[in-house]
Each structure stands twice: as structure tokens, then as C-alpha cells.
Image 1 (cartoon, rainbow, N blue to C red):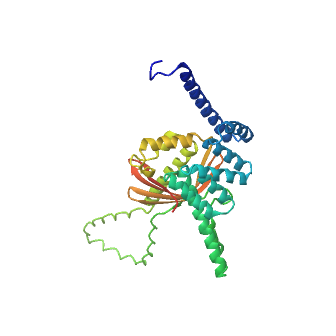
Image 2: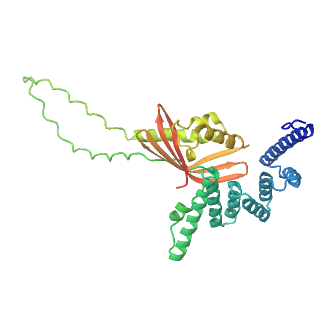
Image 3: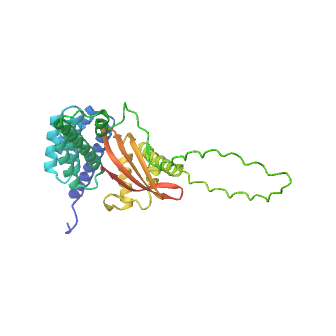
Length: 337
């Protein structure tokens, strides 16, 4: 056999390895689909069978932890994600899932630490950013409650609602708050003046020059009109996300949009397609939407209630928009704050 050429047996071995790798990838794809459909028992059977052959496979171990969490075996899931994070400290997903468990148990400090570790491994990991914003909000609520207890004062209901209000009331979305210029206070009516007596019939009066029309004051509704346009654009963006309509969703972003971590635009779009189209269902609700407009720029702030498959995240969101032609397009997007 010439040096550098593989024997038929070696070639056959490589071919079999490639086929096994492809079969493994197909199995993992089917497991992901079973999880999205809520068929946890079937997914568990597949995972156990594959883990027997590949006990250290990180994706299979992540699936195992997810199934444990979804079937109520919280302590087992905690152990699975902890060990996975120790074996693969470069992966953000185990830290994120640990944070989900800690937060569900009310251990928000532990959740914060886990999410900060996730972001150190992957600074532009959107899910971890959203989850961390919610954890910070809950930590602030706890601190506020503790301060009230120490002070001994009885807080008014409005004060408590302001800091504890993390979601919709009775499941209904709240109307947007539009920030616009306040209309001027109308002036008091001038006192009536007696009409002068008409001139004698013989006298001829010079023609009276009509008074110049008084220019109309700028309409105070103009800023509100711009804010309504921005609100409509933001709600259309959220609806396109919910509908998983990638053409409408990506069209909501301006060509100058600042991608997370200065990521290449095409890579960012590809990543967004994978994250959105890969979900079986998505709902995005905007709560407490507030819009301010200054010329050709606008800022929209709201609480984003995001649900996708088994994930639910409530976070603060800020969109910065610019008017391009007759459309308002997103130029910057941030979570928290």
C-alpha cells in the first residue's frame, strides 16, 4: 500500500463514523422537536438511550436537565446543570438554566450570579440579558419591601404598586403612555365693550382695511401624532416577532442598527432567524409602553412579556428609533435599565 493512502478498512471506518455523527445529529433534532411539542416521556426515552452511548455529550445532558426541570424533578435538574457548568464553563446555557431554577425558588442573588457567569462566557446572549433584567427588578422589589418593614411606616397602595408591578393586571395589556407637549391654558375672555354709535348718514367713512389674519398657533397634537406613529411601529415589530414573520421583523430595523457586540449584520440576522423560526410558538406583549419624540428621533420604553415554548421572560426594554422617509425604524435595542 502506498504511503498516504488509506486502506479500504480505514475508509469504511471513516464512512461509518460520518454516518453515526449524522444519525446522532438527527436524533438530537428529533429530541428538540419532542420537547417543543411537550412530549417529555418520549424525549426522556431518547435521551437516556443516547446518553448510554455518549454519557458526556453536553447537548444531551442539557436536554436531560430540561426534562428533569419540566417534570418537576428540580433537585435533579439543579445537579445536572451544575455538573454541566463545571465540565463546560464556556457554555452560557447551563448557567442560564441554573438561574431559572434559583429564581423560581426565590433565590435571586444566586440567580444573578449564575446569569453574570453566563454573560461572561457570551456577552451578547440575549436571553441571559433579559433574565438578568428581571432578576434585578425582583431584587430591587425585595430591598424596597425590607426598607418599608424597617421604617415601620404604612406605605400607600400606589407606592407599593409602582415598584411591585411587574406584569399586566388580570392578564390584560395596559394602554401606552404618550408623552407630548401640554396644551396651553386658554386665556380668560376679554370684557365686553359697548358698540360705538354709527356715524351720521351724511358722513362717508374711509374703507376699512381688513385686519391681517392671526397665524394659527402650532397644534399641540403634533407631538402626540408622532408618538402614535412610533407606538404603531413598535407594536407592529412585536406582532411580527410573535408571528415569526422574519421579513416584517427584520424590516423594522434600520440599516444603521447597532447589533449586539458589534456583530456583523448578516450574522446577527442569521442568529435571529435561528432563534425565532426555531420556536413552535412565540408571544410578545408590550406593557407600560412610553414614547418620547424629539424631531426625527424617538425612544420607546416598555416591559416586554416574552413567552416561547417553555420559556417565559418579563424584562424592561428600550428601543431607539429614527424616522426614515415615512417610517420609524429601530437603530438601537437594549434590555434592563
